[in-house]
Image (cartoon, rainbow, N blue to C red; front, side):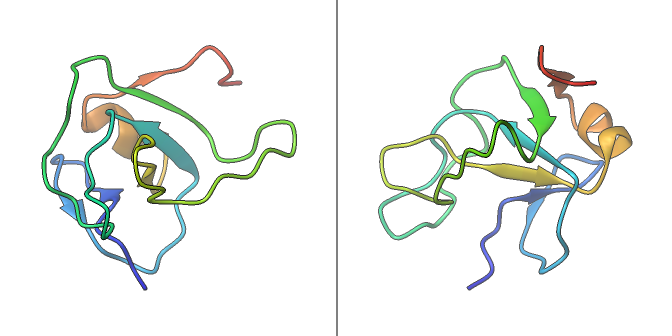
Length: 88
């Protein structure tokens, strides 16, 4: 199933099978069925690397933040996200 959690440069949330190079966070945006129900829950939007110390998380876990994905850093910055502390 493809979720609507990929972000475009003009800040639209879309469904695409393309794999992004960065992940972002805007809070819990999805319901228990994995549907995006709001665009953000806070204004501190960050983006970070997809892989970190071998950690794995399930996307769209109920009650956990919504994983957002960006094609590249330029897309993340254009959509209003800032780099997290772990960005190279």
